[in-house]
Length: 165
Ligand code: SME
Image (tube, rainbow, N blue to C red):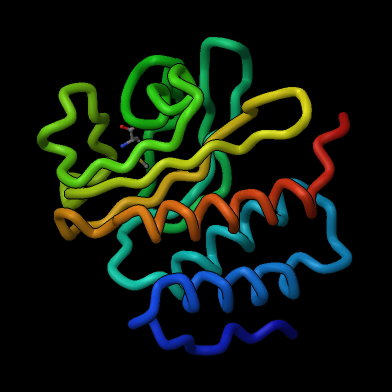
C-alpha cells in the first residue's frame, strides 16, 4: 500500500521535489493512463495545500477537451479549445497561471469558490494532448514555483503512462 508522507511546504522547490519522488513511487510499475491520472490527482489534492479541485482534461479532438480523473466537486465535462483557462492553455501551447479568475474574462466557473487557477500542459513527442488543472479558493494561491513543480509532476505522469490504443 502506498502512503503519502507529510512534506514541509515552506520551501516550495523542496516540497515539489519530494512530491515528485512520491509520485514516481506511486506510479511505479503501472502504465494505465486513467489509473495513473486518478492517482496523480488524488496525491496532488491530498498533498498540495489550499486546493478545491485538481484533475485532468484530455483532448478528444483538435477542438475539444473532455474531463478526466479528478478530485473535487463535479466539473464541466467539455471545454472547447480556446475557451476557459484550460482551452486557452491548449490554444496558446503554454501553462496558465491565473492569480484571480475574476480577472480572466473567459474563465469557466465549475466551482464558484475557485479564485485562482494553474493549468499545465500534458505533452508527448506528438504534442499537447491534455492539461492538468488545479484550482484554489485563495486569490493568488499559485506562483512560478508552483507552476514549475506541477509541470514536473505532469511530466512524470506522462512518462509513466501509456497512451496507446
Ligand atoms: N476553470 C476552468 C474549467 C475547469 S474547472 O476549473 C475544473 C477553465 O476556465 O477552463
